[in-house]
Length: 137
Image (cartoon, rainbow, N blue to C red; front, side, top):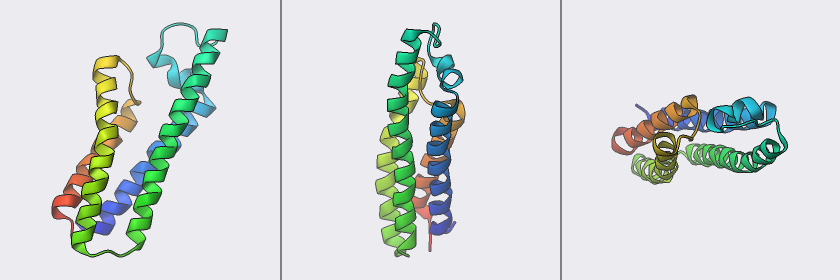
């Protein structure tokens, strides 16, 4: 697979994840957070929890969109094959830390990202590892 396709797929996944989180937390925060919290999110305590969670989720979403923009910049440079592999390895390490935290929270803390976003994170990690090992120009 060409490096440009790996870049494009990872950029799209980053943007979908970031924009999806932003839409979920700001359009309908109660429905977005309800699976992860017990209790009434429409109460005063629930509204404080929603406000606190919005601050965390929007930073995470901005991180994802920023990662997509970073990959977009690297894609525009038309780098050599060896350098593309180094970019994929570095971004895989960067992305892996977020993925490990998301998986830990999902399996052991009862929280974590929505399932759709978790699946996209895993697919992106696989694409980055593939790009690191086998992508060509």
